[in-house]
Image (cartoon, rainbow, N blue to C red; front, top):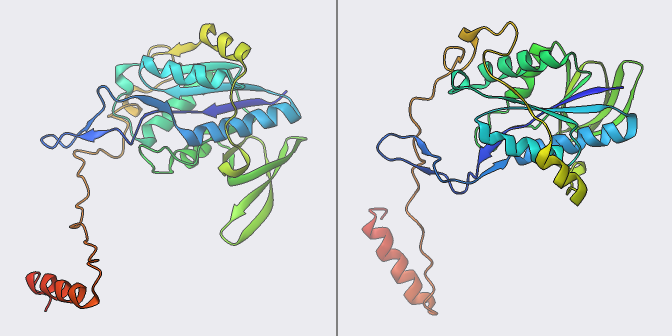
Length: 264
């Protein structure tokens, strides 16, 4: 039976996040959270593999206790068990220390044949996590996956998207995949699965529970990058539409505006 790991992340609703002009930090208080949509595509790909080739799906995420709701959402649509990595020492992590923490926690559940990740998260959008995880898991990687065609005899064959076409690739397990969303739209849970997810057991690991965890490689100490301040983009002056109904008047007004701006 295939052992499948799906990495998910809870993110703030990026459309509602605002910035503190004094500190340059994002204001997350009171902002609704959601499961990173691209991770739901990865989960759907994993569920399809489970349905076709058999297997068991373990979900894993790192975050505050409230991230448990994301794990329950994913349990409702095909996950079999869930792991939450949570504790203050993990805070402030970049992708380098996050990938380290995830792999060390995942090792507590044994070795995995397939690892699925979203292409990126909508809040950070670095696209770095999958490659870092593949390296740390000592796994092959197939990116931009359009379909998983076969999993057998310790190998996986998949079709991936290229800039100007497609290609079929084969890799030896373990293998990490990121997927294109076109063929892996997230599914809705049945009522039975939804209700079961509400009471499902979730394994929570703190920094004290993970075997062999180096505290200097997690959170801020383990981060190779630190973001001291975030700046909003400088937006250009909004344009104007001149439409008086008269070409002569429109041109006259345009000339006036260009003169005011010193463009003439």
